[in-house]
Image (cartoon, rainbow, N blue to C red; front, side, top):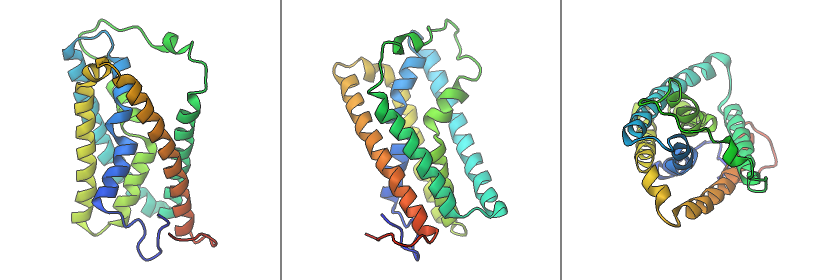
Amino acid sequence: MIIQPDQPLALSPGKIFTFLFVMLGPLKVIGPFGTMTAGHDTQFKRRLALDAIVIASIGTIAAVTLGVRILEKWGVSVGALLLTAGIILFLVALKVVLHQYDPHDQAAKDIPPPATAAAPPPGLAFSPLAFPTIITPYGVALLIVLVTLRTGQPALVAQVFGIAAVVLGLDYLAMLGAERILSTPKVRPVLGIVGTVLSVLQVALGVQAMLDALHLLGVPGLVSR
């Protein structure tokens, strides 16, 4: 997907959904949410999931709106932002891929004991659940790029936000069903395999985003496909 100069990031709604599903979607939320809510009742889980999605939704709109304005005022090019997003995505995804080779003896010790509070602790819905588990830095960067390229086209901007809202809705449903999903036999290993595959694909997406950004920035020697 090397970007043509006359149609930079001319992504269809289907491709936008796919990218946002990988970067912001439910498959990477189920495990962390299950760990955070282990030992808590259903009311606690529903409250935490709702708070996190509300915060993530408001935060996404605010971050994208601010990001678009900063791009204009600071003179940051779309290519530079896309390159930054590609580097972050590449490094984060590579860390996940390499993590499978780390010793896991300490993993259980790092999981905090379940709290007994009836309501989620202050700040838990914001961090680490809403940011950066649900809303990732590279996901926000992609949204900023997509909205910037559609400036002056309200219908297309609304389409991007609408697709993001659908993905966040899937995140919410995934959190509500996390306990059932993780308690189903053989689901956890399957999620592990799918997560590994998605991490590898994210590494590739990071590399591709960097190539696309270099093409946008006018670096010669890149071949379109």
